[in-house]
Length: 65
Image 1 (cartoon, rainbow, N blue to C red):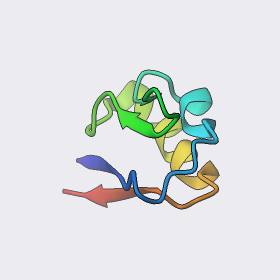
Image 2: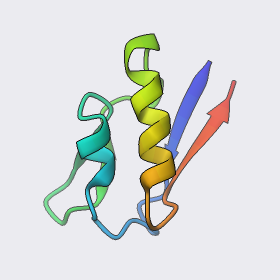
Image 3: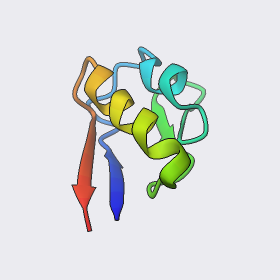
């Protein structure tokens, strides 16, 4: 099972993750990434992986469980 990890200390608020998969990622009032779920389902997993790749600050990572 895939798990997404977000390091809010590294996030610069570019929002690429939200654009890639809004069912998994959101941003708080300061623009910092907020996970809506850390275990994307099969339907959102592909785009969640793309979001991790697109993250300019490398604040997102994937863990396999």
